[in-house]
Length: 484
Ligand SMILES: *Cc1c(COP(=O)(O)O)cnc(C)c1O
Image (cartoon, rainbow, N blue to C red; front, side, top):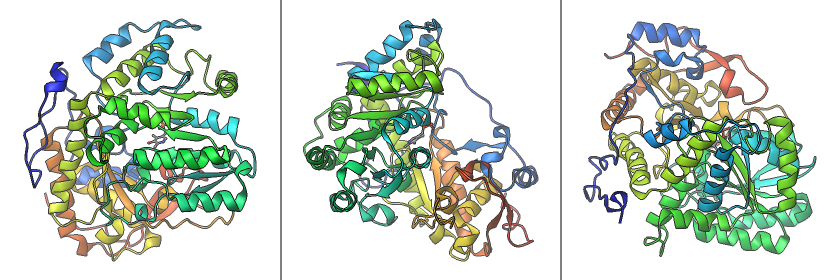
């Protein structure tokens, strides 16, 4: 038994007052800058009330994303030095290929510089205009690539995924009735693949069960429809399966991950999530003909099929990160840190998505700011308030992220209007989580001061949330001067 396997967190039944101590220590520190309330007000105005446009130097705790923001280990940095920068046939590619084959179980591995690059190639290979792509809720970049290639996306996630209060173990599951009805309606030949995410980001980082994946596999096998996994957070999903799915508690996370992948025909991967890499991704498939097509396209968009837009050192960091990602003690502290933040916020009576997901705590902005009308973007407004209050950067996951319907041009109005507090892996401490929980509770106590939200001053056509700019609807500041 290795040291990692024998790690046991302090057992604390009932309220989670702390999270398990980390199975690592800090070797290198990065200083943070504290800002004054006035500096933050000025910075936010200059950023067009879009926290994504703030200079990171003016952010104290950056919970914008867990993508590429995780701390690499000393082993990953050491692996970086071993990177083979050969243009063709790099040794580092073979190491990555071996890691993906071993831990995810797919035969053909095509590197891509990040997840959306893998999505681009997959969508170009499989989708023709008029195709219909079902998925357990949309993800921004995934759906954008599907639509750019002429497909229509269909949400087939269980209804409860759209209900922030439904406290269920597997809110990422597919509603098989929805999938079956879609197949009946459009015909299996119009469905190039089923797009399965694990965990489901837009539902709040909610997992899908192995049983549900097996049912999807069975149904799609009958109709000869492939299943493609969005594997960005599949390890986190595997941890939830181990905790929540009957009969899975004795299996390792690595075993469960392999079982999940075995129920699919291929995967797109953002290695910036589970694999602790700052950049990187891959596309993997079982079908050699698909792999051949993907290799031909990766050369056009990314680079030769043995580096796919990554430096040899990045391939090394991803390969090492994959091995670290399935360690039980590491994944446990990761998920429990997120749960700790969620429990503290819930204890303050703040409306949020239940249960707490794998990578983030999602605040229910519509319930948090009931006086802000939907067309004034309550979630966008709340991200501004969190920054003004304590220098915390969060993400809007609501109407701004959902964008407009490509046919009608109307704003989509998703039932979930959320603010995501996304926790990078191995980066922040329990004290940082306390600062965040305190700020959220403080704003919630002052929620009566928010009567109006923000409106667009600039709106890009695709993935508008990244570059859009806003102004407060009322001439008064978004809310009174910061309490501190
Ligand atoms: C991040 C992410 C992607 C896209 O990956 P990038 O590396 O950011 O391009 C796709 N799907 C999910 C679920 C993600 O979280």
